[in-house]
Image (cartoon, rainbow over all chains, first blue to last red; front, side, top):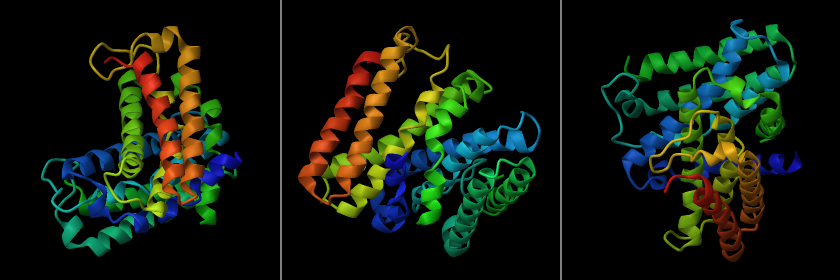
Length: 151
Length: 151
């Protein structure tokens, strides 16, 4: 366990250590990367949602493990929003990601804060706490999608 | 920082908390998930490789941050190797992932051990140490690809 704890120690520094534009050789690499990291995050978030919404039985340790992955991976995708990668197809980022970047970044930060709270709440092994924290986190996903993602 | 450290505390338990077969509703979901997690891992591993191989200037903090992500995400993709998802196209897993599962799991574990060592080595902020640990980790990637991935 301690090794994995160490593994996590510096990841918060990623955003500052690596300016987004310098991280990807081609814009399409950035798009692939952000999609992949959202896919991983959505998989684990969805498993918590299935418990929160009663579609699968509540399993406290599984919820906690999934929430830990969500909270970690939530730090990753935003580096992939490099200039020139907006789109008009469903699911693609709208141009206002860049024209309203401060608002977008704030929405991302809000999500990261809520999934961090979800990871803490999930450790309580209590379904009601999980539901509340999941709902708050899901609200931040939806808010950002409503504002910045092509419907 | 401490919150992110907490976030990581239970993720080691993921494999045991969540039997692979029970985690995905459809085999194609498992395929998408493992591809996505390998994509994230490869992006960050590739950035370390670019430094190790002299294609970009050595940046110790960036190497350390990338190695931390690699070491974390390396725990994820193997849950996506669910039955019935082998293939014959380039890059797909061969059937021996399942017929030689113990050997495959050992190869995965070896990789996870080497990328954990890489994350530790990267914190030394020394290019020679980074190169050595990167080479060892890359060797475990290649060994598993040679044995279990369609060429």
